Image 1 (cartoon, rainbow, N blue to C red):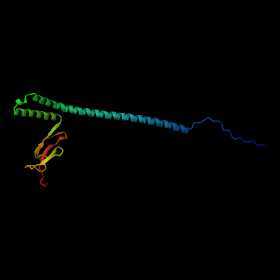
Image 2: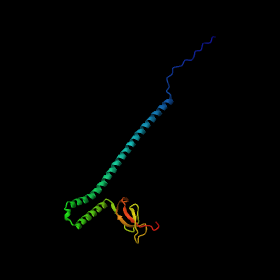
Image 3: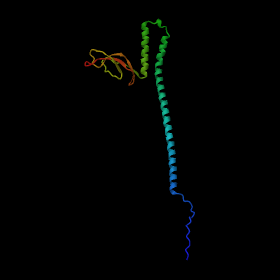
Image 4: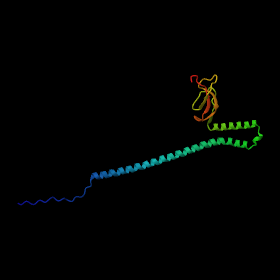
Amino acid sequence: MMAEPTQPPQEQPTAEVPDVQAIDEMTLLAELHKQVEEKQTAYLRVLADFQNFQRRSRENEMRARDHGIAHVARAIVPVLENMDLALGHDLRSLDANKLADAVTLMRSELLKALGQCGIERIDPKPGSEFDPTFHEAVMQQSVDKIAPGRIGQCLQAGYRFGEIPLRSAKVAVTPNPDA
């Protein structure tokens, strides 16, 4: 019997079976892409919120500053008006005492207006403790019955707003005997 010649096996046409691993990778890639877009959207939202917060903060700061300036101006304008009224008179007809009284009155009104704004005068008394935050020692001066390193004399008053010195009081300090 004669052997039949063997033919190479023919490849049977098969329906393409999708690669399960490729589908999983595509699904994973699509999911990651979606998550990236969500994170970018959330980031942009947070960034916009922060920029709005910064803008509102700047606006509030400017508004508070303007209200503070207006508060001081409202307190000082009446003093300025009184000065204008006084200057509207013939000052040559006033004697020196009346002029001095008018200046003293305007000074007290100005100090009152500054006090309404929270500004206080720094006018240390002899013998009080030297505080470099509010006092500037411009000279040393020996004063009887005042301990060394204390204020001997106030040469020029200063001003403060709460704990913020606007201008330090210029003082003479009693010298230390060791120095």
